[in-house]
Amino acid sequence: MNAPATVGGRAHGQARRTTYDLVRALAVSTAFGDRQVLQGVDLAIRRGEVFVVMGPSGCGKTTLLRHLCGLQPPTLGAVFVDGIDIFAAGAAAMKRLRLRSGLSFQGGALLGSLSVLDNVALPLRENTTLPERVIRETARMKLDMVGLLHAADLLPSSLSGGMKKRAAIARAIAMDPEIVFFDEPSAGLDPITAAEVDNLICKLNQVFGITMVVVTHDLPSAYAIADRIVVLLDGKVAALGPRDEVWHAADRRIRDFIERRIPTDDARGMDVAAHMEI
Image 1 (spheres, rainbow, N blue to C red):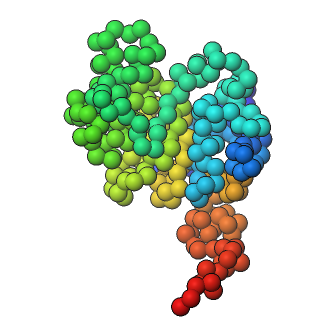
Image 2: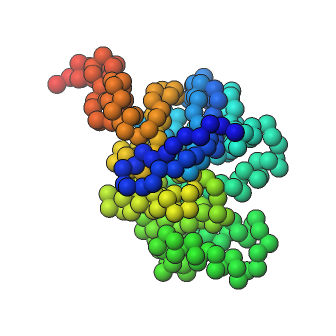
Image 3: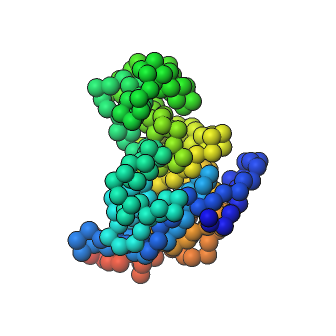
């Protein structure tokens, strides 16, 4: 068993809690053709924490998420969940992993021909032998948890962007997972709705102890929800640690990202203005 660690990065008066590593990535590297997307990524995600993966567009955040949740093996390296190398353990072990985890896609990925309730019920129907009455009641309970019970009978096309995000979260927690992976949960939302989604993620983590892995480049959301943060730059780990420690890192590249500073001319490359005819 890994050595225990204490989680408590968010300054919201929460009790600190002792956790253990649930997911580990060791020397993970991935290339698509000649393009190196991830290079030697090492990190550990502790049980019960909100772990945020940050970085600019194209830095490898979503690719890393796909490795961590078992959707795609890396080119090199390994991913362990509870000490099991998930890409070497076989199909049965992978299925057990997926039954223990949930995934909330960036666009929601709701099935348009099914009602909101049936979207949430789908994992239960596909993976359990529960009676239909229990499945529907469980789906209603999950929708109530995310504040969407009133929309149970609507089709996804009738939902706002924020409602689709919450419906996707309800489906992701339908099987009572130990860990939920989020890909850009606040993308495309107005600030108030994004804050509501942030609050929902924190509430589910605090009340049910679900480990949350959140990929985002939304700085206010990252700061609001994170216990710990990893920052990826050019496919490498540029910073990893408690939220406030990463937020105040001295590395100029991280400061540029967090403070939204345009890189200097030397870092930016070609001076476009010098090549334009005025």
